[in-house]
Image 1 (cartoon, rainbow, N blue to C red):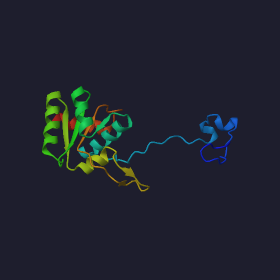
Image 2 (image 1 turned 30 degrees about the vertical axis):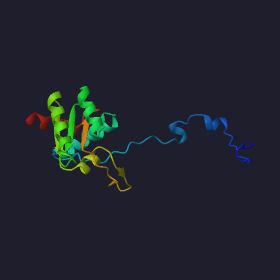
Image 3 (image 1 turned 90 degrees about the vertical axis):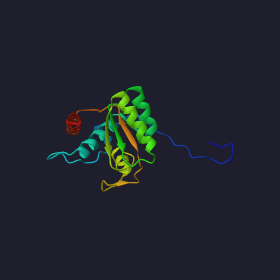
Length: 164
């Protein structure tokens, strides 16, 4: 083929019929694997581990709104089932807004100590080869709109919220 702009020839790739056919698992195609951080399931689970598990499941099922704008929108629409708020937000007005919206819509509110911890829980980071979080982005608010499937972490959270 001749390139009109630079008048140079471009290499042409020819694909055979076999290359265009979808491959099956028996032909060597790798199955897609979702990366989920390992959470210990043995012994009694604390509330932070339960929140981490619920956020991972919600992220897998596309049921997580991250950040102030997405979170406030999900709460106002009535889609929110749980709201997690960082205690060290940049502005106290953010905290007041989310608390007021949650009180108005009767959404359960849980707070975590730092926004970096919440960002890591909400999946706003890269996981390196050893399984450690790298380049964590801070997140002030995360709202769960869909829990996904039932898990031990969700049961722990429900028991915690009943006791409050």
